[in-house]
Image (cartoon, rainbow, N blue to C red):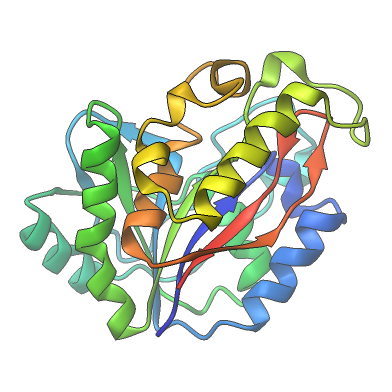
Length: 245
C-alpha cells in the first residue's frame, strides 16, 4: 500500500534550483505510481475544512520577488473533482474551486514532471487542535488503499526571519528541534508529537505553526515513520521528508 508523505516544500525556487532536496524529490517521484494525489498544504489555511473540486486547477504563483522564470512555471495536472466531491461528503468539508499553491505544485513538478496524475487539495483548518488534525489524517488513511497518495506539504523548520546564506551551517537550535522530531517519529511517540509546541526550540523554529501542521495530517494518515531525506537550506530551513507506511 502506498505510504502517506510529509514533504518540506522549500522556497518556490526549489522548482528551478538543483540541490539535495530537488534531486531527492525527483528520485522519489520515480518510485511512486499513484492513481491520484491529495495534498494538504501549509499555504491553504482556512477556518473550516475545504476541498478543491477544480477540474483543471490553475497554477497559483502565491509569492513575490522571484525570477520571472518562476512565474512562467505552469503545472497543468488535471484535478479529481469526483474524488474531491466524495471526500467532501465523507468529511463534511465545503467544496470550492481552487488552484494549486506553491506548496503543492513546486514539489509535484519535481516528483511528477509530466503533470499526468490527477491532483486535488484539502485545506489546512488552522483553528483545529493538533489532535483533530491527526484524526483528519486517520480519516484519509483509507485513500491509500485506493493508491491515492496523501501528502502533507510544509517544512520541518520554518523561521524565515533567521535566513542565512544558502549553504550556511545549521545552528544548534535548528538541529535540536529536527533531532527531537526525528526521535519522536522513530519511536512512534504520537502523544509527544501532538504536543510538539513543547519540544526543544519549537517556537524558534516555528514562529507560526502552519508549516509543521501538515506533518500531523500525514502522520495520522499512515503508519510507522521513516525519514527518507534530510538536508538544510539557508542554515535554518530543514528540508526533511518522511514516509508513513
